[in-house]
Image 1 (cartoon, rainbow, N blue to C red):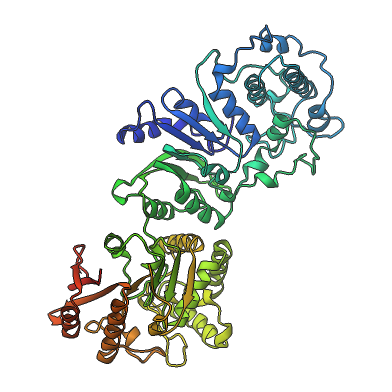
Image 2: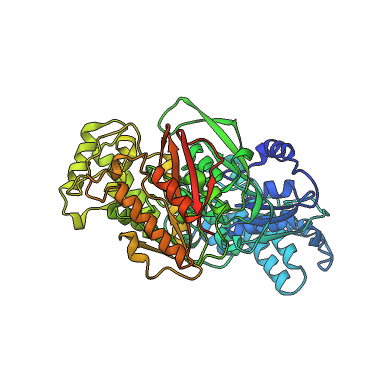
Amino acid sequence: MRYIGNKSKILGFIDGMLSQKGLLRQGLTFFDAFTGTASVARHYKGIYNILAEDNLFCSYVIAQARLNTSEVTFATLGFDPFEYFNARYEGCGEGFVARNFAPGDSGRMYFSHDNACFIDFIRTTTEEWFNAGRINIYEKYFLIASLLESLSKVANVAGVYGAYLKTWDPRAVKKMTFFPIEELPAEGRAQVFNEDIFDVLGRVSGDIIYIDPPYTKNQYSVQYHLLETIAKYDDPVLSGKTGARDMSAQSSVFSKTWAAHAAFQKLIAESNFRHILVSYSSDGIMSKEYIESVLKRYGKPETYEFKKFSYKQYKNSKSAERQSHFEYLFYIEKREHPVYQSPLNFIGGKYDMVDFFKEHMPADISTFYDLFAGGFNVGINIDCEKIVYNDVNFKVRELLEYITAADMVSFCKYTEAAIKKFGLTKGGKESYLKLREKYNNTDISRRDCRDLFLLIMYGFQQQIRFNGSYNYNNPVGQAGFNDKVLEKLISFSYIAKRKNIVYRSQDYQTFADVIGGRDFVYIDPPYLITLGSYNDGKRGFNGWNEAEERRLHEFLDMLNARGVRFMLSNVLEHNGKKNVLLSDWVESGGYTVIHYGGKARKNRNEVIIINY
């Protein structure tokens, strides 16, 4: 059967990847998401325990027919149904297909009149046999799937079934032969789902998930509406010249720009399978870089593999020149606890230290207080009942709070439109200043957080800088909004929506009276010996100096006296300069210092200081 995205021709590449990873062996559970015509699942049904899913009923029927063949014997029927039907081609009466998809009443030219009547005869007889108990459900699926395969040889279409040809293709006027889609008898059992992938995902788990989503804007539900109607044979309301049924419920988010990006991130996040294989195309909505970023977010980066191979040559619709077309194959082993990253490149961010922090944190945290949260790389990764984000920079807090609540599809559509409207490019000073002027000239209470986000992305070193009037004053930079930023944005919003986060912009001491019990306080203040421009006290927000350092030490001593657990991030030494105030405080309080043993961070002696 001609089917968009069929992977029969790349099975050897998939075999090679699985073999390379030591996964081509008996006993594993393999989930073929977006199974289509079940080419991949069928290839592995003698090796793996197979799960398969597709939201189109016609694909579900084909998958059942190709994967659950052990139930198909036609023993109760007592004769070969294919011989039976082929002997009765002549003189079949008109049914739904003949009335709606053949010349005559409808004028549609999907099938010749005789072939359409033959399709109706097979379909109505199959239903009669099943209702009378002469065939079981798998035999019914087998006959319907065989019909879909057989009619593809005489359908008057160019390849898909969204529309018919205006003249008869020579093969379309030939007599249709009904033949089995699969050889029988054959062993094989599988669990097949006809649901949305996200409705299935929470109920299945195993060893390997193979993901082959739609990759263009062409909706399978539109391109295969005819097969869906014949498979269901449910007398639907048809509309338009093509006789399409309402397929809105089967519309795939993976065929929609931006929605595909959000859906893919969610799919990988919620897949409960150890090994992930993804097929995609160089012509797809998502880029190779975006897919790689998502996979490395949820997988072990050292296990990541990528293969690119030429699949076919084709003519671009806007050009007669031959265009290269590549198929992508990705693999990664999923990690148990992904680390999420702020979409803001905040100075002093601790993304690369999150695992180190969590290793030294207690497990029984009720409320996690991230009191100098900044870009929120630490707090967003903590699993507990409640997380309190606090930072005196209320503009950053507003932006992160907005990203948490926002619909990412709408957010990305806005950024795409704004980038185009202002002509934003890396280093594009004039267009950048136009956006900055728009933002700063808007009343502070009505400024759009999405504009601030773009200013940060295209600003110098993506710094977050304001003047004393809270106008953004960072100059243009050499960065921009790219696929890696997109992935961080979508994954951050995804996980933030799933946590109980309270956003605040207060002085940290105001939390003293509410912290207690099993709460945990994480403090990542400005570093006294490595001060940056964002905490010099000249940007509309409080600065940091020795007096502030002592005030923080007194606050932490108070927490310690009350039995509240805390962790302080800081540096004891930087480029030969020592933080004597910090060292003396640690010694006087008898606190524990743990040195960060990871990758060196710009000649800093990074430490955490804990009281438990």
